[in-house]
Length: 596
Image (cartoon, rainbow, N blue to C red; front, side):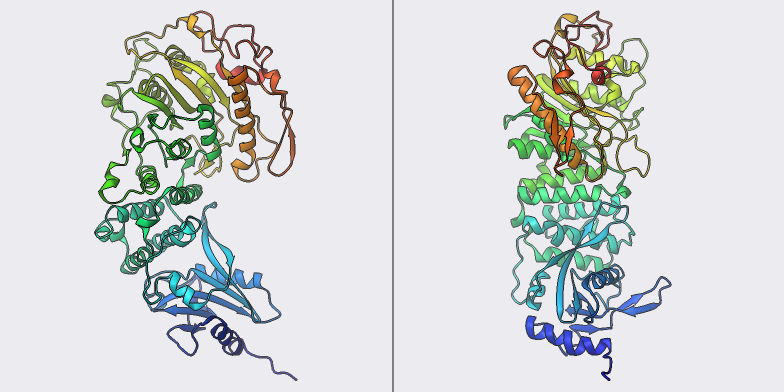
């Protein structure tokens, strides 16, 4: 009868020698390879077991291994090693001198070995570890990754590794050493600020927040991480884009209570605008994390001095500023010149902007004070009835966009559909019609904004915004005179307006982009066709990314009965709402409410 071997025997006689002879891992060195020594603590704080193998160098954990015998499987081993990773005693110096987690994991089944590298999945309430299977790494490669090999030279971060090798590790340091159960708004803010402060002054960042708020282990972990990479040499557009992806992922966790404009929506809005001259002056007065400014730069090669972003909250302000720091390769005192401002976006930034674009915050009241400063250039009695208006954020945002744009400049905003239909907002439609030509209004389906845009009327805990939103594209035609009444010369309203309504898809399962992007592209194709030929394409169906055919609910040409005439004529008496009245053009029933 064959005696059943113990797990310790299997580890000591099979796994450790195999890793040593094939990949140079330590053997017979208790300081570098710990077998059943690193504890797993139970909920009550008592020791509830131990991890099979943890490899170390200079008391820094490098690799966590879960070993299984031949009759087991890697899936079960990986599930177990991830549990160990979540409960790794990083806060005890004897098990992690710098208070860091091992970045690499391995599972063994017999002598079959698989290696993994972890990253964070931010999509849920509590971020989870996710793993990427990688090639088996020799021990020397582990030392190089951690900056522990002899004569180590800080390496340049590649875009494909920026998130997993740098950003996620910085997130984990602040998460664990600030004892946060979740990746909170403050954790993300600290990480972005830490990166910003390091690039501002690599020699003195240790004297500033958020670094000084960490415990000694956390501070060492941050120093070790920055020591591994030449961040200044890594800067550039591709790294900036990866940074933004990381920010978007972390914002989308519900714990942050932030809402982000999907990239496909941002790109669609710039598609409506067409190619911008690189000297175009662009303002986003509620810039959030900088998505619109990022697209303006990336799609049009705009000059840094010709853009400005403003946000009243610190987190989006520092995120947008750091994005531009990375994109334009700025460091040291050059960072001070980045044109992102933390402050009230409704104060006066001049009236010479060629494009004002964004997704302004909206609620039924304005609550950020500074009314005296705001109303030095905005109007608190826009309807001219002698009474102070009930000031909503959208009222002020629409005024700010119109006031800030130069004559001939364009406005492209995401606004609630109610702005175009509610009776109480008629004066806002008159205001827009008086000072602008409306070029296009595109109604978006519900759920187009995930938790993580500035649409604030969201129920706590919901993942997508239920409010129906529309994109407005307008061109400013005259300067605003605050003393003018909202009387409209109807003669200038006889012009075409492009209208589109994107119906809800049959299913909204998956990422918003997966079901929205194709629909936006259909509208954009129609917009280009209309601009070029004053007619619309005949589109009966679209094919989704999943090769699922979806029919257009109405033939696109049925949106308007005579496309060669006005797409939405606006003419009648001055007191009329922005779309009342009759013309030769008939608007489909689905679109009638857009310009009531």
